[in-house]
Length: 223
Image 1: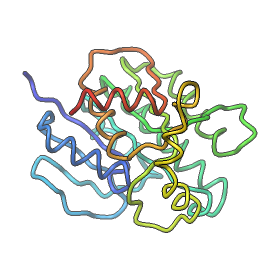
Image 2 (image 1 turned 135 degrees about the horizontal axis):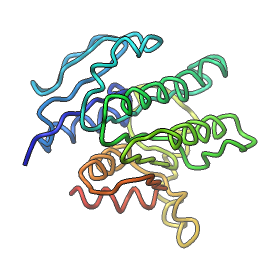
Image 3 (image 1 turned 45 degrees about the vertical axis):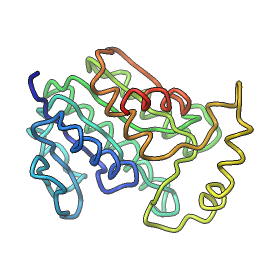
C-alpha cells in the first residue's frame, strides 16, 4: 500500500498529542507535518516540525500538499481573553487551513468541533463551532470528517475547575446516559484521536459528522 502524508494543526493540545501518538504507532504516513506556534521536539523521525505564524498560514501553503489534514485547534474564552481572539483560533485558522488543503488537493480534512455546534445557537461557543462547520461545508474537499465530542476527558496541562469537577463524576453520569442521552456521554481525548485516524483510513467521502457515541464506535475500529 502506498504510504500517505499528513499535516496536523494543534498537535500540542490534548487531542492533538493523542492523535500524534496514534499516527506514529500505526505507521500509516511516511511524513507527518506538524504546524506549531512554538518549536517542539518531534516524537518520531516521521514527524517534521514547522514553527509557523498562524496569522500568515497562506505563507505555508506548500505544506498542505498532503493526503490528509487533521485540525485539532481550539481554545477557550478564558484563555483567549476576548471573543475576537477565540473566533480567530476556532474559526479563522481552521477555515484558512481547510481552504489551503482544498487548493493543494488534500483528500481528507478532519476537524474537532463540539456537541451543540450551531450557527444559530444562543451560546457564542456553539455559534462559532457551527460557523466553522458551515464554512467547511462550502469547500470542495473529497472527504470532510467533523467530530462533535461531548465533554473531553484527559490531561489538558491547564486548570479548568468546571471540567475537572465534571470529569470526576463522568463515570456515574455516563452510566445514566442511555438511549437519547448517549451522545452526551463524556469521552476520552485518546478515543477521539483513534476515531480521527480510523476515519482518515476509511473510504467515506462527502460530509461526515460524528457525535460522541458515533466517535466511540469509530474508535473501536482502530483497536
